[in-house]
Image (cartoon, rainbow, N blue to C red; front, side, top):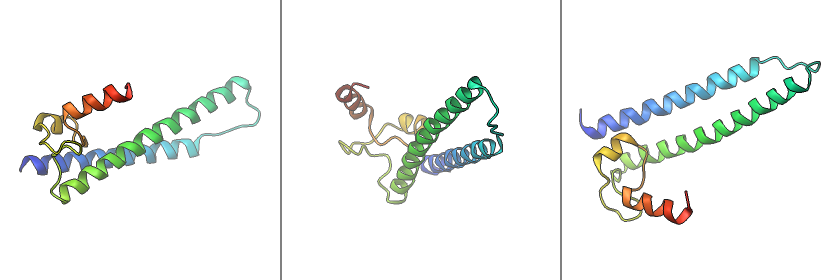
Length: 116
């Protein structure tokens, strides 16, 4: 198996795992019993859980988009090249973060400019 096949397999596994987690969370949320009789603490906990779930869904959605973009780039044979400078992204970086779209230098510059 080539490194590109390994990365594609890893991306597909990550995608599958995220979708499974979302489905499990959705099922747990749907099966949770909400009772109008609960006290303020119950309602606060419920609201906190909903907010956390929303944040997790947004994070997972972003990661799914990044994974899809990486899979598309593999299919287009554009994967492994930085989207900013078009230089080859280090293989170790691709293995560690297979949905990355920037080389380490461009990512560092992006973070410096955005303050992240």
